[in-house]
Amino acid sequence: MSEFDLNGITYRIGKLSVFDQWHLSRKVAPIIPTLIPVFVKLQKSGGGNPLSRDLTGMAELITPFAEGIANMDNESSEFILSKCLGVIQRKQGDSWAPIWSSRGSVCMFDDIDLGAMIQMCFRVIKESLGPFFKGMLSGQSTPQG
Image (cartoon, rainbow, N blue to C red; front, side, top):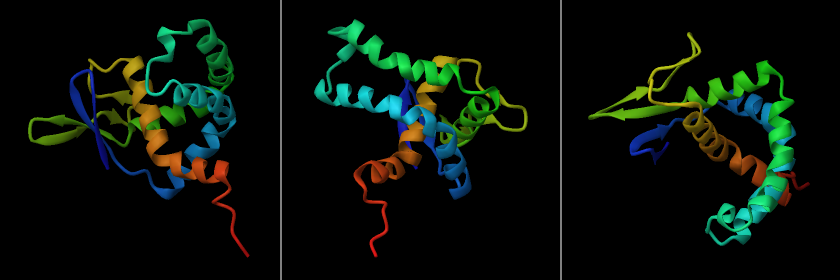
C-alpha cells in the first residue's frame, strides 16, 4: 500500500487482486502504446513541467491517448474507474474510509471530482500494473528456458 496527497488530502492505494490486475491490464492495454511517447517526453523534461514549454508538442502527444480513451466502450471505461477507485481509501482523522462504493458505483465524497478520480486511477494503474508493463517493455517478463 502506498499513500499520496491530492488537493491537501491523504489517500491510500490498496492492492488489487491478481484477477483484477489481469483484467485491468487487458482493459488498458490498447491505450498503453499511446502513453509511451508521453512518458518519454516527460522523462526528457527532467522532472520539469513540459506543458509550460511546449503545449503544442504535448497536445500532439496526448491526442492518440485521448482518442484511445474516447474510443473505449462504456463497459471498459467503467470497469477501469470502478476497479481503480475501489482500492483507494481516504484518511479521516485516525482511520481510513473507502472513497468508492462498488455496489452503487458512486464516489463516497462530494469533493472528489472527475479530474481527481482520473489522477487517482493513473496512480493505481501505475502502481498495480507498472511492473508488469515495465517487464514487458524490457523483455524481462519473458521466461528463459
